[in-house]
Amino acid sequence: MASPPASLTDAVVAAMRTLFPEELADSAWDNTGLLLGQAPQSSLLSAAGNETVGTVLLTNDLTSAVVDEALEEGAKMIICYHPVIFRPLKSLTTKDPMQTLLLRLVAERISVYCPHTAMDAASGGLNDWLCDILLAGEAQVQRTVVQPISRPLPEGHQGTGYGRTVELARPVNLQTLLKRLSAGIGGQRYIMVALPPSLNGLSRTEEISKVAVCAGSGADVLKDTDAQVLVTGEMAHHYALRHTQLGQIVVTVFHSNSERKYLETRLKPMLEVELETTAYGNTRVIVSKADRDPYEVIDVRDLA
Image (cartoon, rainbow, N blue to C red):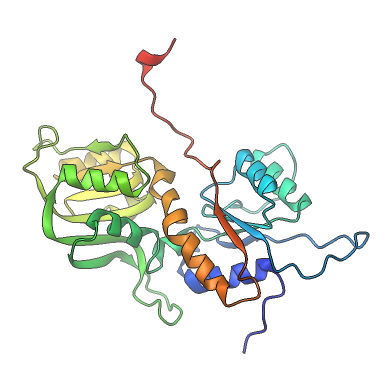
């Protein structure tokens, strides 16, 4: 029997590894897991005892605004979807923005866990969530993994992988699909659509029965799919052009907008349930309000 977690960080790491095993991550390039541990308590300070009540902040990206928010909320730990460390560090200085943030967190004894592609690949993870949004409660014929993971995986996680295709039992037009996507990711007003030459505008007669999704940057994962519509966060120009020439529709919403709402609608309640049976069942799990995509769409006609 596993020993009970000795700290909030240990409890949250165990919960995240249960939900999204790190073995699911694409370790060829990704960096997932506990990337910043909690600094030890100073021996000069009086021991406060084993704290079983704390706050965990969920965010898509780590920025100065998010760190400020974590400090204001008294967070003991941050779950940041995107890795805060990608490449080996030769130094930690204030000359680099991300390193500055990490130094601030170390000083405040705040740990950081990053699930990234493990959360993408997991059953019930980001890509399944995107499929659920597009289905809007309606039936599906089947759902398949675009790039299955071939290496051995933990019990209960076999057969999963990156990206999803979903076949709708009842075809819908593109307008319906776009409205479902907008509502599901948080009511985003603007969506980018690349149409094939055969379509003149958003025809209401275009019936969609098969869609492929990949949260974030999905060009490599979705490059060989035969789905009518490809939904992702971002896709480079030439990849999108190739798909439109193949007769496919590409839909993008900006990278992190394809991911962020998952933290609130799925990860928060999942993590709360996992922590319920531990000594840290009273942990407050909150979603960052400061976290946002770096891009925004402006109308130059509104500029002074």
